[in-house]
Length: 363
View 1 (cartoon, one colour):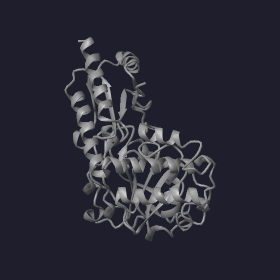
View 2: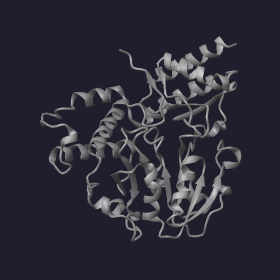
View 3: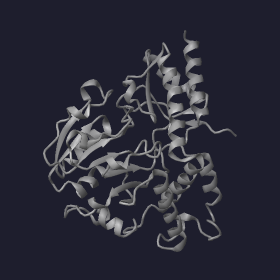
View 4: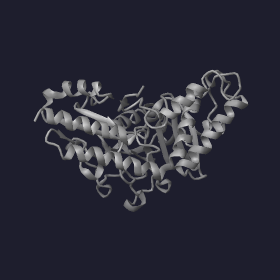
């Protein structure tokens, strides 16, 4: 039976190959007599899974040795508190707000430090990116926070800003939840990167945090021990019981990504998928996208029907064609196709074919 194409923004589709392998190993992982769900996180079987996942991720993302990879919990939303608890020093933090998620980050951080709005694209409806040379930076900010891909509004930094080029010495903190592992990352510009796993890495429950070692020992006294980066790093992400099954599943995804050719190959594939979909939208009389072309997301493609009375008919027809989870976020409306790594080119082509058919039927 052919599976439908799932365009959910997260929890999102996973590679079928990975799901098949996990199903085969569900009752007995590698002759251990146990499911991974049943293993002690301190036993040799799970430790081998954890170490392999760490090594594969470091290789995939080319993470330098001066960064620690932490497997945590709470999702990207919790990191909006955990990051300032670890790095703010109760001082000032700069925020570049480019959509819903970076706005949430600023609001949450304001509970623990002074949150300065350095730049925002709210005036244009979150459809562009504010030029770094125009940011209003604080003096001696503890760090600068940005979301490198806004899942809801479909805005993506095609290149991370070089803070030193604008006279900023603050570490850059990047929420990369919705496009992590979709393209290479420039670690020379990053202090901390974090991501919820449920969009591009695996199931919900795991949070990836990659932190430069010199930033490990700055936590506020009120920071919970389980969220203190230094303590988590010293305990190899096992200060408390980690999300073991989610780590195992993410590890399978990392191995799948390696088999696909790694980050360079995935970036090329994602560029092709995004170009196919955006070309269909731009060449249409019925659909449109609001985001400026040079900052459109490759992962999350929001689009709208010029006649919104057709929205429900479009979604109903999509489901009949095996195209799922295309309804846009409630805060913006319209449609949204999330085309993460696990979405094959054939799935995007199926969506484009349906969009053209739907338009022609109403011409």
